[in-house]
Image (cartoon, rainbow, N blue to C red; front, side, top):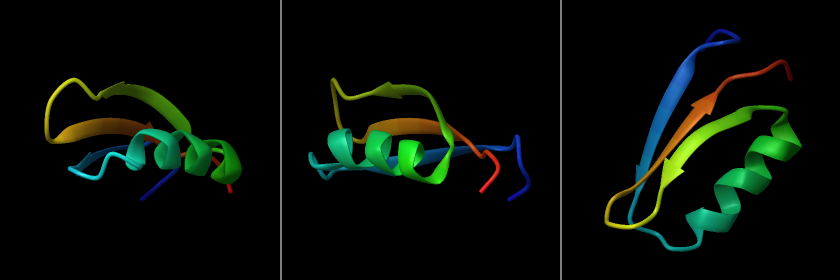
Amino acid sequence: MQNGEVLLVKSDDPLMIHDIPNFCRFMNHELLSFQAQELPYQFWIKKGKI
């Protein structure tokens, strides 16, 4: 992926609610949005500079 591209991650793992935001902070990506009300959980991540 190139910087600025957006990735949609789908998961049924409840730990992802914590793991994805931590991953984004650690890797300098932007968590644009997420929905965790129903399965699959969905996370929209904008790739940043690493």
